Length: 167
Image 1 (tube, rainbow, N blue to C red):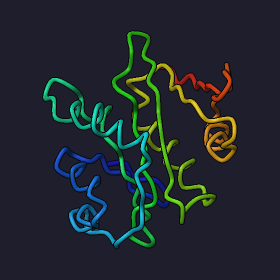
Image 2: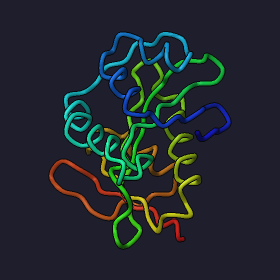
Image 3: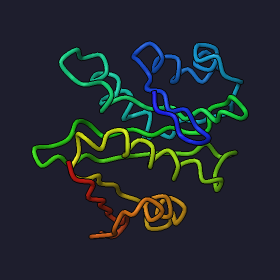
Image 4: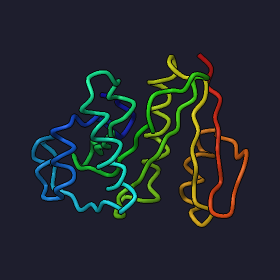
């Protein structure tokens, strides 16, 4: 568990991920938080099914680098978003981060705070954190600029970001 000024970041275990997918508030009951309205994008559902859940279930993997970390707003005791690493760091100590804020909680600074908390907690294990944002999503890019990421490349659809953290 990681705690920031306004948030608690909790890594979900396999059983909790199964509840997360149901969207029936069983996860919220398990975490003892207030009911929330959240959706799972098709991209996240595919990642959960084919990448996240199999890797979290694998005892040879460090599940903290594969699972969703849910964000709990301490003041309201409710879920406001999720973030995750996209696997363990590579041989250069680089890891990719992904994130999403639930619609009712966007533009409140939660994700910038959560990304900072995750990176600070994992800093001893990393040399750099990478991310990609869609060009038409300035809010997502702002999360990264707020955390001192630098845009180093782009393609037709995405901006690619990097933050060197050192080991």
